[in-house]
Each structure stands twice: as C-alpha cells, then as structure tokens.
Length: 374
Image 1 (spheres, rainbow, N blue to C red):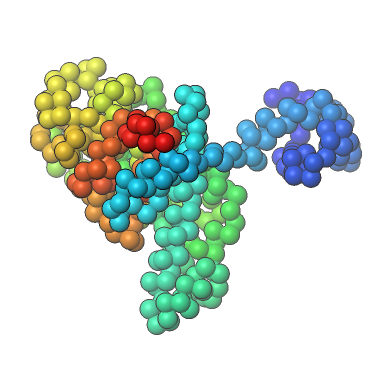
Image 2: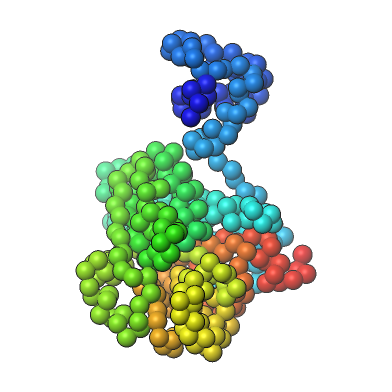
C-alpha cells in the first residue's frame, strides 16, 4: 500500500465515526487525523480533506464498516404466506435485484442470521444445562451471561461454494467484533460438511472458509473433511470409514447449525454441471429422475430427493432427509442461502424437501417462484 495512505486502524476507526456518525466535515476529520498522526511522528502520512474520502474504501476493506442490505416486506409477506410449515423459523428476503450485488447482499444477510443463531442456540443450550432452576430464571441468567454455570459449545456445519464463502466472510466479520459472545458460548466448532471440487476454486472449500473464522473472541476449533468430492456410489460406505473421513462422520451429530446453499439445474458453476464436463452420463441419469437442483450436492426433483443410484455421489455428511429432520428439531437450525436460484419453489412446497429452518433469499427469486404476487 502507498505510504501516503497508511492510516493506523485505530485512527481510521475514529475518523470514520467522526465523519459518518458525528457529521464532521472532511476538513474537520482531516485536521483530527493530522493532529493524531503528528503526535505519533507519522508526518509522512497524508491527512487533509482530499485524503479522507479514500479512507471510506479502506475502512470497508479493513472490516470497520459493514453494509446491512434492506429487506423487502412485500416479498417477505408473499413467502411467509406460502411457507406455512412450522419448521420454518426465520425468513429473510433481501430487497436487492442488481445482478452484481444480489449474491453478496444475500450472503451478508445470511451471515448476520448465522451470528444470531449462534447466540440463540447457545442460550437454549445453557438453559438446558441448568435443570434445577425454573425456565424463566434460567433464561434470564443465560441472556445476561450471569452466574458461574458452564457455557456451552456451539457447532456449525459449513459447506463449500462461492455463496458459503461470502457468508463466511460476513460471519467472520461479526464474530471478530462481538466480545459479548463470551457471555454465551465457551467455544465455537466449525465442521466441514462437504469437500471442495474445483482446484481453481480452492478458496471456496470449507477448509479455506475456516480461515475467515479464526478471529472470534472465544476459542474456535475446526473439523475438516478430506476426500474426493465425488465418488462411485458403490464405494461411498467404504470411503466414509477411511482416514480423514470417518472422524468427521462420527462427529456430525454434534452440529447444531448448518449453513448451506443450493444450486439449480441451470447453474453452470454447480457441482453436478462442473462434474458433467468429465462425465456426462451422470447428468443424463440425474435428468432421467427429474433433477432440478441440489442442496449441498444432494439432488432433488419436483417431487422429492433423488435417492436413486446415478453412479456417482458427493461425499457429504448429510443427505436431504437429514436436513429435513434437523429443521424440525428446535434444538438445531439449517440456514439455507438461496440467491437468484431456480428450484426454490420445490423446497418450499414439497414436505420431503423442507430442508431449512431459516431461509435467506432475494426479491427476484421470490418473484420467479410466485410471479405477479406483489
């Protein structure tokens, strides 16, 4: 970085607060920076009114600012009216339809939901850990973080993909800045629930996403999953007993919250379309069974999960029926992030595909599922 813009993070934070929150002018903020930088002997750093505007970009880069995408009340009403099953405990519709922003905005909202779920699950776990107190008293204690009761661990399952990585970026930002988390949870454990596939997109693998989540104010632990992303179906049971895989499967029951995304049949970057470049026969067999999309690489049709053997399958800790069970369990949560995706209508309307307890999508997707609804 150019030495002329090397404003220390602590001064950058204070300068941005003065500019955006206190309404100080560019000149006033520049004078503030100049005084503080001179006091530190940093005379080489430029700090006048012209230098203040670029600092907004640096503040975003340094995670000192976070965008909160707006939500659509009309789309929410449409979606919540259609999703009447009790498993759905949280519905969020981002009011952004720009093609270049919808993925990021949806992921930002999902990262915030994931953070709130950590606190919610931790609070409920702590309540359950104090069986001798009344429920009301235990709930108050848990919310305040008071007393000497042992704090629970919270376990999150993380899939792979661009959307999940974007959610990880936002969740990592939230975790880093929330010291109050120490009142709720003793440790956060992140589990990989699938494997990366494309070597050119290695940053979208769960173990790469883990690096975004290291700076929480509480201890963190990571449980990887090391295998080929897609294997011969006949070998799957053997592979899941092998090194780097068996321990991950044995610990999957610990997972409280799953963060996952979905791909539609037309999604060129979806795993099955990527895989079909080398083996078109698998895609043909999927299409014979009415394939319209997948959640965490487990395919589904308009009528339910595709359980037929199509020759190959992804190595994942969970099948769709596992997500359905988790969504029904009030002690668990499955957060589905579905920006600009086809196939969402089936996940809403088919009982065997109700794979989410919490959903984050966008207004354009809702309109595609329910055209003319608002």
